[in-house]
Length: 179
Image (cartoon, rainbow, N blue to C red; front, side, top):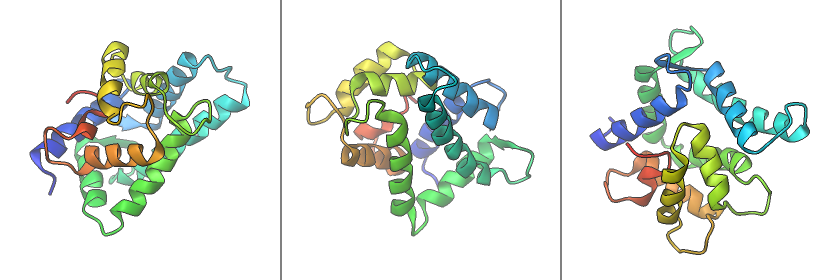
């Protein structure tokens, strides 16, 4: 069972993923996120970079669509929470999270330099509806070692805290915005 804090964080993320505010998460929401990210990165919709970004983001939808219990092409908040409860409590959670971090790494590390900059983080979470000024300030908190970037191992720890932590002070809780 999800804790109250996990439910709050996951519900806030659900609401951010629901880009068209329909009350469900669908492939169309992920396409809106792709468009927002592409715009912030000034990607031409006919470019290979745009196609790569779209394929990564839509692969996230493909995995999430498994939560669609009634097959209507839309994931409700209830289905979303049940899906994540199952993942978080599974014996394969760490392997699933590692794969998820690798997928998000492909989206985050825009310039392919092996680290996530403040601007790359701001671009990503802004596409999910987080206020850019808040995101820039939050990056400073997420960068716990103060080196100006987030490494892949740091991203894993932050994402793990987001999904599993029940400690309100855990840094990763705010990765996807305030809750």
